[in-house]
View 1 (tube, helix red, strand yellow):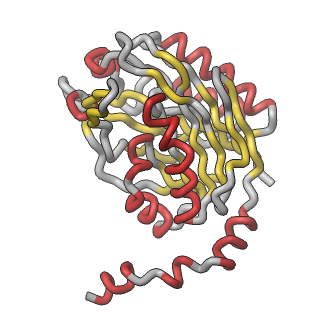
View 2 (tube, rainbow, N blue to C red):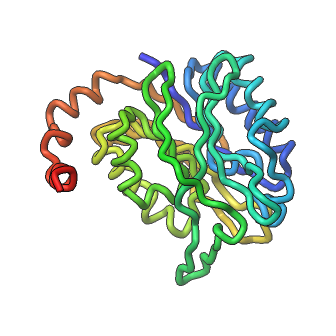
Amino acid sequence: MPIVACVQLNASSDVEKNLRRTEALVERAARAGAELVATPEATTFLGPHDRKVAIAEPIEGPTNARLARLAARLGITLLVGSVAEACDERRAYNTSVLFGPKGERLATYRKLHLFDVDIDGGVRFLESDRTAAGTDVVVADTSIGKLGLSICFDVRFPELYRALADRGAEILAVPSAFTLMTGKDHWHVLLRARAIETQCWLLAPAQWGAHDDQGLRRSYGHSLIVDPWGVVVAECGDGEGICLAEIDREKMLSVRRQIPMAANRRLATQERER
């Protein structure tokens, strides 16, 4: 069975430092046998949003070229959880990039749901102020199955994951920089719910710890791999590192046979008949 890995990072506003640390952890996962390695949201930059716009590159830019070479050198499928993709002079896209084992770009996904919140206790964030939202639902073919792409705050919107499953997704990716305050209560339950309701494997590589963005962010960590029954089969604790698990496609098919949710759906059928 193929092995997958989630990378857990403590990224900063130092792009070169982030890239070196990412390369080291991805290499470690590849040495452990991972065929697909996923990194968190904001892999290459986690800092003030005005600087994010300033360092944003086109999708064919040098940072993505470097990550493509990493995938090719290791012969793996590499999901870069997100990078800052150039949009306009005021905003960047928050974009996942999927590279194949020859360094080819298999897919890109621009984050649909932006993190605009004001939570009692100190979490106030307006991602849409400097980030443009995407518009597309993206499922990509990989050597281990069809991969449905999403990013962090997307996980609160189950309709996206239903759409990914309807397009054939067998594995869901949720690269994240989930805040400590919300993560301690919501992270595990949301991810397990998305796996259960879609009957997919789920990979959630995450940022961890305090970042150098003027004290605005502290990430929860706890990168997870969840099976289609909703069981957490691998998890990182505190600190940078990796977690790994085997992906058993037959387990997904078995869960879908036991609880045939697609055949039993009512609302979707009614909507199609109207």
